[in-house]
Length: 378
Image: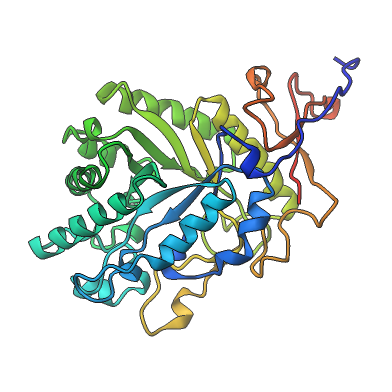
């Protein structure tokens, strides 16, 4: 093993040159307009990622009953497509026009429109209009965000309730675009009681894929969880594919959001990114999306009129909060860290890894039979 020598790099390329890839990045929270995406488009496209997850923002789109203004979302979708990036849309959240509780929550986060027929009708109208509008531009739509977490299903989580909501939403998606891919789940807690209630409804037959969010500092534990999920879901629908809609770590201490307890640094964040994305890729996960493109507020429990309640910054970004403070090193430099146990790395082809600069080298100090390092271009 010590005689191994480096023979070359897989060059980093612009997203527009990448035809197929597993790698994605999150532009979440634009439904709440928490950052200016114009500052991130070019820098993200230069990374060579392919898939961009965005949130649809019903409350931002329909501010007068029955009037849907998609111009803000049109601009985002067009800017991504122009740079060779492929958006997929998470359909969320509620709308204070139809729900008194949603009116009190910043962005109507976690307020599903399920309590009255008026809410349900307005939601279906919105979903069908959106999927029809982007029929030739967006091919994947995801139903809600983290419905098994109380922050995103604020009146009390219920697998059965989400299943009924997801079934109706899937129908509304296909009414607007029968050819699109419908993604369900978006689970984050892996509560098997919740999953049992969810699957007992038979709703898995409505989906083309299942998405999950994984914020586990140990990539080996997290891949074991993916295998269990696959077994559970494919027992109900053997055709289901799997997408990792979010994973991420912070670049410093003191942030809000997942894994906030850790003594995070940029170095540790980079290691986490490399290990988590590649280990889940090795499990055959179709899209692996890292949260997020830049540092931003979490804004999951904000109250309208109380700005301080949602200025809770998380430091997950590959770009800093102002889009210039980099969570990857400055121009003409790169970060290089071992990925860890990835025994299946030999099956990774240069074609599939296009867009990420991967160096396959051996680190005897780590005592690992298979190891590689990853460089992230600026």
